Length: 132
Image (cartoon, rainbow, N blue to C red; front, side, top):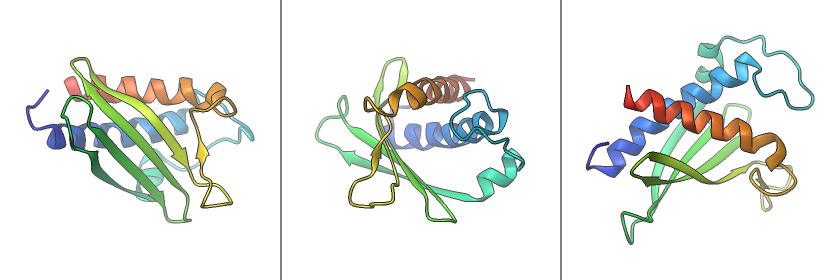
């Protein structure tokens, strides 16, 4: 990994976005309503934009880096990561809900049964791709 955490995270974020939409397209982790994805991976990625940001820079070892993905339709996802010697670790994840003041915590007890395996798979894939 690079000594420059922000550049390292930006590189990881690119791989995470690619892995995320490849996994959605492949249907490896079906979730309700479990409808097939007809768009190509390229079309899915073209429909979203993303930004990265350093959220907490007090200490490099505990700094929180955020990846925000936004779709053209207004949906959004916020992923919080911390870095350790093995790579980037997902520590929080929220997604848009009908009530923007109260987003869905995708790692809480209600959603984690669906999203935790999905997001850990994507995080592992992105870390692996980044190392290659």
